Image (cartoon, rainbow, N blue to C red; front, side, top):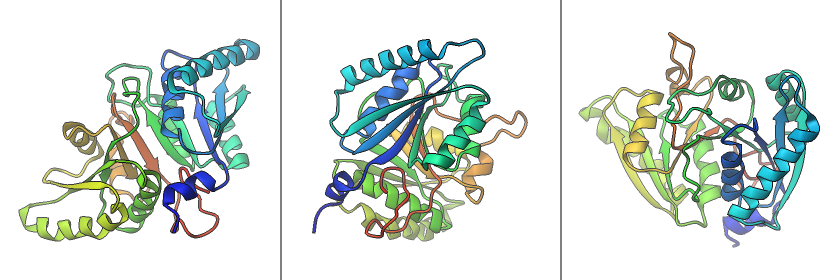
Length: 287
């Protein structure tokens, strides 16, 4: 039986969107996107919404320069093709329309242009909350190295968590990736039962080294971000949706802001994923 990695490489191209505002950290977002998909067959669409008075010709030239710099840094891949898509008008509306047409498997976007900020930028927040796609958030201080140590939030509900784990296991199956399961537990008495929850998922990552962390803290999104940083993960992933226990806790209800990490890339999975053997898989990297 062929490895999952072989299936990833041989299936049809994944449609990936990279949204850039052409500010300071756009090249960082492009570079990380190419790095994360280095072995995958991808059709990249680089998306930019013009500000009032901006020239589309100048924007296109800037994007080509930034992409060239990113390819120089990460290396050109024969598996990658690129389309530049420049629009005018409302960013969210334009992005929603394009996503409904092209059905991207994943979106790479920046969290904010503010260094060391734990608060997501308003445009990034709008995209995260309103676009029905798997989203990879790249912060300004993200390390440009392949994700080798991923912290995954374990939710006790099961279904969304299983979708997340299937997606991540597809992506990491042929890499020497450390998987860190993080589960918030109410008290010491609940630890034994909670550990069983983690054990149910470990077989999905049998080719990877896994660690389990049960945290006796309030189960909030902000605490998750801080904890995965403390255990030296270089990226993190969680199921994201209205029924996720982290969804409501991600929002500061006094300000309406959404928390983020200034250093760690976060993968938010939204799409439901059957097993990888089935047809018409809609996931971050596989169709």
